[in-house]
Image 1: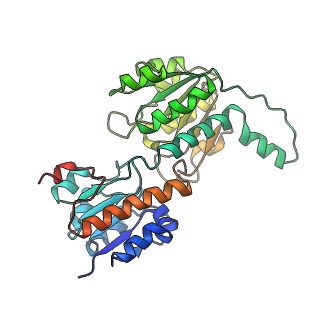
Image 2: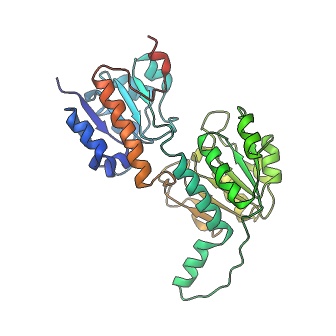
Image 3: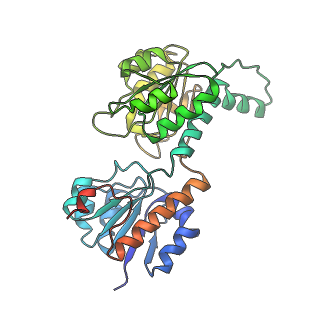
Length: 326
């Protein structure tokens, strides 16, 4: 019987399937169904089709226990990205379904996007662009990035790449991470501090933590209240790391100067999201990791994992490693 997979990941549907990763899947003789929704599938949509598939390529699609249990033929859930908080690992492992991801694929791109957002906010690039297109000519005063204090919440692969970029701007870097890499901090002169110190001290705070119960709403009313009035916040990680209502209040009341958000607690956000009312925030549609280079690299890792699994082999990039030893 021919193995069959569902491609739910929007970026894989729009880009990778048309490139080398798609060729690899087709050459392996795999039957491929491609979602035409143009956005993440809902749990209900997944429940209605998942039983037909041996594998699925997901983005932020909710692979809940119900979906996984309904996927009686599932052998692999391949995440086209690094954050796999939308996949219930316990349920997948219990059903002997491999969960794979693409470590290292997006770290450079997201770090680049983080600095792009920092500069756009600091120099009012977006407001200036809008004004000129309206026929206006405001001489908007920005602020320098050089020699500022940069706070990083989550010093993993992406956070470390942000640190390395910061060295070219002579920034003082403060980092919070429960599993801090002391050797890295020593090498790059990073101050390892507690969470409150990051918020109190830094001119720019950027979030790169994984989403877990302990990090959900790590940016909240209390921590935002610690920030300086001229400071800015960047989130290119996960929407649920930031309490959006608390952020709205802080921006509206000018308790912080600005924010740039690439991710939302609900994606796409509702059209009446109050953040849309504000001028001192930059909003982008979860594209910090979207570059042709990154999507190709990530897609190749996904295709490699899918093909290996459906050939009866142990795939690379396995998250639930306990299955490997069984």
